[in-house]
Amino acid sequence: MNPFPLLLSTAMAGPLERVDVLAASPEGWLWDEAPLAAARPSTAAVRLVEQVSLGWALPIDGLSVGTSWRTQELRYARDLGESRVGWVVGMQTRLLMPHGLRGGLRIRLGDAHLEAGTVLDAGSTWMRPVVGPVRVSPALGLGIWVGERDSRGAER
Image (cartoon, rainbow, N blue to C red):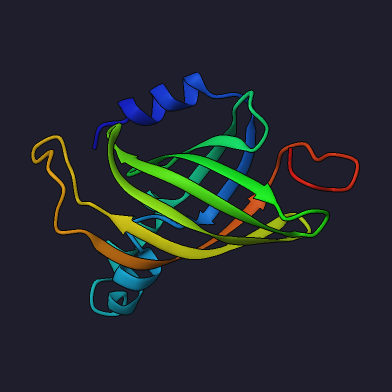
């Protein structure tokens, strides 16, 4: 595994704002690895650690970079009015090669947030930089907010 993309994207970002314990990523740990955990416990454990994502604030309100060992994501999230519900969209890369898009809703629950949506994974890699076949899968994420908040408690 090459740590360069993780280090590069972290160096370009601002302060740490969130830790996604279960990242809404194309790898789909919950859908792909968890069902096989009893048969392959060590693989499931490694994949769980690989998908944990750190979210770094960027200077534009709502825009952030997520970095995990396997995937990097440019993400934009907004609240719907004054509520704790909002939407999120993101472009996901692997070794900085775009390979997926995601969109969905999120709910803020104190310092935690829950995201649910859809991921489109093109499967592109540097070895095979072509699109196809596109995989559509559900996305579920659970994270902890560690960054600053504004006066109404919303994420900055």
